[in-house]
Image 1 (cartoon, rainbow, N blue to C red):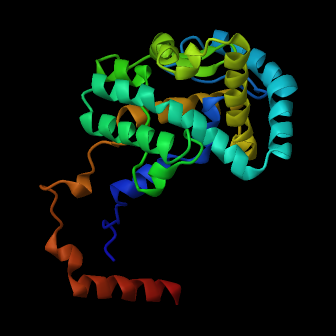
Image 2: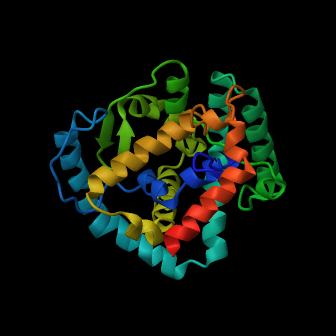
Length: 274
């Protein structure tokens, strides 16, 4: 095969490759112990000194409170029950996705999220079972941070929030709207509302226990970079930019596929091996 020829993965493969499990750690974890290595400052993290302090604070809470509870929850909860709990809270989030999809002009995704909400709420018994995914109606979450990015706030400073973990100034600005569009917020009974919020947090944390070992090196920077890359991926809807090999004006030289040249190259490799 010619030296300047390469195979380019299909868009779906690229999308799957980017959604690595390590990125999921940024959803809940505010930190694990950090080695605070010095180096070139990250252009999107000018407040790194402050962020590291909050990171350590969150780590203490996670290490001595949230993580032990999540491990206990994982131990006593059957996997089907744990899956149903996650499905229930994920289904409630479809309302937020519908609203933000409309605000971003994504009518198709708004329709898809509406279908998921109706199907999983009815056939899925209140969202306990993800029937919509089995019907190949895939979930693509949207939030107000993504909406603000679509409206023009594309670049934003990285920010670690106390208790909540990785974020950006843009995403933190959209957080009140995210809370306002989450149904649990409107549960009248305080004890029930707090219990549901705690269960949601513990269930998410339990789902990340198996992925902690994926973090390597400077943990603060690993999680920061993972969060920023994941957000950029979601905001762009998985678009990775132009692919020169997919462009219409990209031409291969006929000589690149000349059998004689290929044979000569193979012969040269054989001689080198001898």
